[in-house]
Amino acid sequence: MGTSISELDAVSAAADTVLRLPEPPRRLRRPSLFLDLDGVLAHLAATPDAVVPDAGRTAVLRAVTERLGGRVAIISGRTIAEIDRIAEASVGSASGVHGLERRLAGGEMQRAEPAEAVRDAVAAFEDFARTRPGVVVEDKAVAAGLHFRGAPDAASDAEALTRRLADQTGLSLQPGNMVIELKTPGASKGTAVKSFMAEAPFAGGTPVMLGDDLTDEHGFQAAADLGGFGVLVGPPRDTAARYGLHDVEAVLAWLSAVEEDA
Image (cartoon, rainbow, N blue to C red):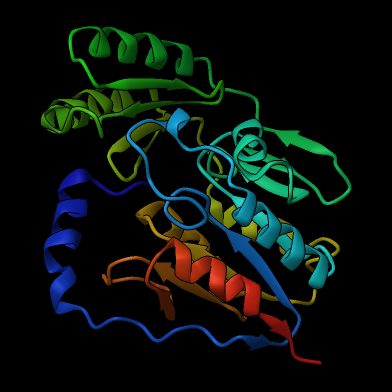
């Protein structure tokens, strides 16, 4: 269900030929917002731990969540614990690890049972990182992440390793921005959007998914399938999103301005 690193490179190379999308409207009919974290609410950093809380971001998230009656969820590849650390628990509804974790509006937690092969992937990633300074391994219990933002020369070797492990184990391959994950199959950001939209307080609203990465395309498509739309954050590329925002600052400004059209 993922997209290859070579496809990521092709998207990047073609970005200059794609027109930038228009900004999303600020008045929407009962908007239900689904927000990626890294690259959307927070700037990308060299390592996952380098992304830290920000008082201004937290204030914006609390204000828009209150204004929209709780119809805001953060949907990330990070764990929910990491989402809460960075967003300072400002948003009650959340989905982590590409839909494998989900916290409902009332606080109930849902987690997929981890595939046994995730432990093998973590061990293989740790062996890989041991001889490659700058490579970081992230153990998410239901998924294993291999980050190489600090060692970009390791990208091709990382792709080869994760492809081989995916073939051997049946884990889902999920490329991202300078990271590749092997995860328990069966969920995506799209399944998370659809699950939230079937529940209060999101049900009956207009789903809007904000994301920057190819992992967010599932969310863009789910929002469109349910009568809403996606918003691509960052450089233009081929996407299922209908609108675009330039960067994190533009996202926070839009969230501060978005209103419900009665």
